[in-house]
Image (cartoon, rainbow, N blue to C red; front, side, top):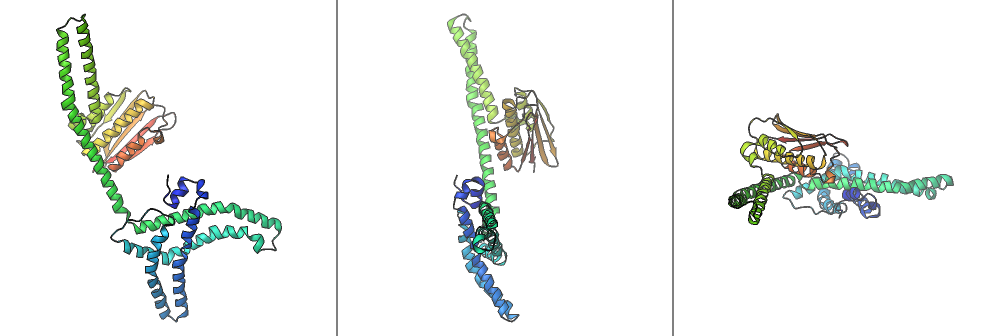
Length: 385
């Protein structure tokens, strides 16, 4: 996977990271703090050489003049540790000025101190025998070896700080709230569109294919009554009638999976009892709700219960399950338990990741307790507002 920032390189490729260019780029990024540092030092010198209060005025003027060059410099320096292009925003220039002020007043000296301690320190240790000829040879060699051993640590440390520093700069330059809100709204629209499409498919199957299969099954049944059962034609018609009834049963099961008509007509509690009643593992249901909940809440909760019961039947090796549901202080709380072997892990494709993603659309939360040996508890909380 392509690493676009120093932090990604550090976390995704911890061992190959040392052989990449990111440590050197991170050092160069932090050394770039010398540019605003020089401007601040010039202001300090001016303030020190000129009698107050004129000295303070001149120093402040130097810092003010340096703001615009530093504002131009900071986004370009950021490319050393962050290859992701910065989007253009209406208040971009103001944000660049704000970052420049922050850098001039505080961040530049932190950057240089980090380079001093993490890079210059180990280098000085390595060069101890050369710069300190009076040191005992054994001590000099030991100190040099310690400096060499500290270099990988320095690489990790300087890259971690440079990555964090770059992330902070990006947060200042790019407003995160509107982007995140737009992503959430887009995801919610996709889920709504998907749910509408599910309902359309369910309606088409119910009113179209299912009715045709019902008519076919009735016609085959009537034809079966008019033929002797021991005749070849009677047996073939009988087999066709049985196949039609089986296909109708499977289609009805498919329609329930696409969208529960019970959920639409009678609400979440009845829909949960319906899906639990069709589970191959006995499931106790205790869902008590006061009235109907918002459609998005009911659909999401039903989806979670259906997926959890499917996992229970396929993976848990349980002998019994239970579903409880209550509304507590404006929040729907649903729990699905089983007495199976436990060990549910989202990384193993048990559907838990999909449940969490679905819940995130309605600001819901998913918590799972599934120690090895069981039991498993899936708890869902969905705001009803």
